Image (cartoon, rainbow, N blue to C red; front, side, top):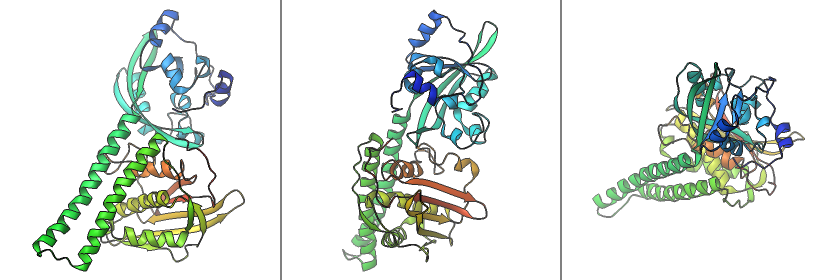
Length: 389
C-alpha cells in the first residue's frame, strides 16, 4: 500500500485498537521471531480472540508500521484500515459485510482447527479514498505453551489480478464489438457491396464503440499506474446528459429498455475532464441497463448542490431494480462482479476515475421499493492534485 511513511508515534496515533483491549504479549522468543522475519511472505500471529500478538518484518513494511508494538492487540481489520470499520461502530468481524470477508472466513475455519488457502478482497481507507486489495491468505492453527493461536500468512496479488482482469475485459469487449462489425460487413457483401443508411449508422457506431473500448482500457491501465493525465474543460450538464442518452440508447444493453433524461435535470456549467466523466457516467448507465428488465426505464439526471460545504453538480443514474445486500457490500471492489469470471472493473473504475482523478465523490443507495441510484458529486472547478490510488 502506498501509504505515507510515518514515525512510530504517528502510527500509534493513527492506529488504535477499537476493541480497547490491552496489548497481548508475543509468544515468540528472539530465535522464533528471527525465523518469521526471514520469511518472504507477510505473517500475523493471532490469539484466540483474533488479536494480533506478533507481526513479522514483511507484514510491518506492508502495513507501514515501524514499531510492532503499534499493531499488537489490534484485530486484522483494524491493522489494515478496513473501510467497513469507518461505516459504523461495529467491531471487526461482527458486521454482515464481515461474514463475506475471506480473511474472516479463513480465521473462523482456522480456529476450528482447519488451515487452508483462501483469497480475500479487502477495501482499505487511504488518503480519504477507498482502495481494494486482493490478498492470498494461508492460515494454520498453532498451539504454543498450551495456548491456541492462528498463523495468517498472506501475499498481495492485487497487481496480478488487475492485469489479468484488464486483459480479459479488453478481449471480451473488443471481440463482441468486432462480431457486430463482421455481421454488418457480411450483410454488405451479401447485398453486392451496398448498405442501407440505417446499417451504415450502426456500422459507424460500432467502429466508434471499438475505438472507445481500446481507449478506455488504455486509460484504466494508466489510472492503475497513477499515470493518467486529467484534461479539464467547460461542460454543460444538460448537453452531457443528452449526449449520454443518445449514445447509450444504441448499446446492446439498451435493447427493449428506455433511457431517459429527467425533466427536472439542472443546467450546470462546470469544469472537469469530459472524456473521463463520460466514462464514469457511461459505466453507471451500462450497469443500470444490464440490471434492468425489458420494458423498464433507466433515468439520468443532475442537480446543483450548494450547501455551504460543497458546491457543484451531482449526476445520478437510476434503475428500478434493487441490489441484493451481498452484492451491495462488495460493489466497488475491483475483483467482484455479478457478470461472471473475469469481469468486475466497471464499478471499481467509478471510484478509481471518479474520485482518484476527477476529485468527485461516488456513492449509491438501493432499496426494494425505490430501486438503485448511483451518484457522482463533482466540484464546480477541480483542485489540481496528484491522484491518490
